[in-house]
Length: 278
Image (cartoon, rainbow, N blue to C red; front, side, top):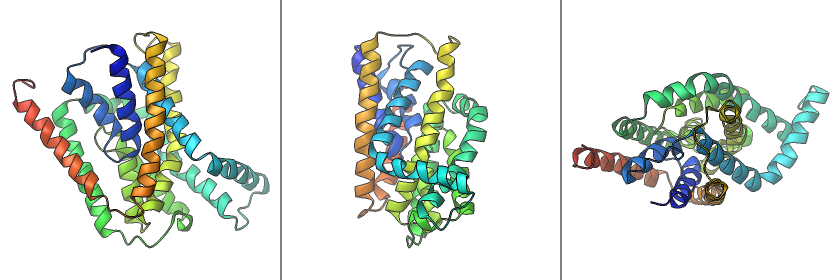
């Protein structure tokens, strides 16, 4: 298959699965495996950076109004050394607190965990684990609060839960939405907080991996049109995925995503037992 088509598909997969709770890292392993793609660039750090930047821009475009409010509010809180009962100041620092675990743990363990969980069978298992987490959270959560009622301890708890998503197949959005539900947030509020805290996390992950571009550790560099295709596909699909999730969760439970994750795991097992997976 043409490399441009592969880049388009991988960009679409990254953008959609970064925010729909089915695991982007797991799908970025499974899709090339299912289609038998062997091009080294598709599995390179350089392409991962491109896709992460696409989803980062999607978040910034979708939530730009929020960040235009939150960043000055956070700076004002630092200047005054006070939240002054301002919900925007509080939200800015809730997001900072939620990001701390990923900043501390991600650079150390992310690449090691991704190396440990790279085989399709392992990802099928973690897809099922993530499905169980989503299912329990959606049924046990009271869904009586919005994100403005979070405490700093609860925000840190969501950030700690997000660390689990370093394992491919678990899903960053899935585990952080689940943590919010366990804490009593309604579905839309849990997703909104998850996506806002994803902005610094996704941006930090992209910058951390981008350093390898300067040290020639990022793998082969393809033609610029392939890079642009992957970036734009991740940006557009990521933007649409965020909008879809926020609207969908106003009215619907997470059951469909639970079913999809289990079905995907079953499909992987079927392929592994077939001549294709042998």
